[in-house]
Image (cartoon, rainbow, N blue to C red; front, side, top):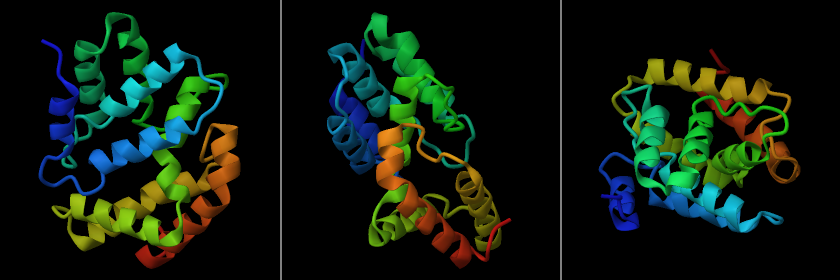
Amino acid sequence: MPMTREELAAAYAAPGRHYHNLSHIRDCLAALARVDSLSAAERETLTEAIWWHDAVYDPTRRDNEERSAELAEQHVRTELREEVGRLIRLTMTHDVSAGDRLGAILISIDLSILGSDPARYDAYAAAIRREFSHVNEDDYRIGRARVLSRFAAREVIFPDPDFAAMYDQQARANLARELAALGGGA
């Protein structure tokens, strides 16, 4: 039996989800609504990928994206399963091949929080820290700095050119500010 949107929304309301929650999904869907020139099929595929991309989220595990993709493949319409699963799996690394338009859009949407205004970014960073409250402060600082440094070192953070134009400069400022607060990196 397919999982309903209500059941999926309930998964995002689980305890311990301070950032990877329903607000994140709503923000991603709002960003998708601002993307022009998508066919109805592309918009539906991206909508499903957004809804399912963090359906499974346990910060103590490293296979959340794979488990979310597998869950999506069990519940989305048959003709969307393969592409929705593929898109969700891209969120493991946030790497997108050249010419992968839908992948570029999804990854840019998922990362758009990095380019938000400083207060919103700081709230996001604090929410991520709460999700990783099981990790001691020193280890968290090292791990978080490693992740942020990888994004900061990329030539392109947002693979979709429209998102890059809109968010890249602010994202780099936010990343630099958080890296400095973490002690400069790993």
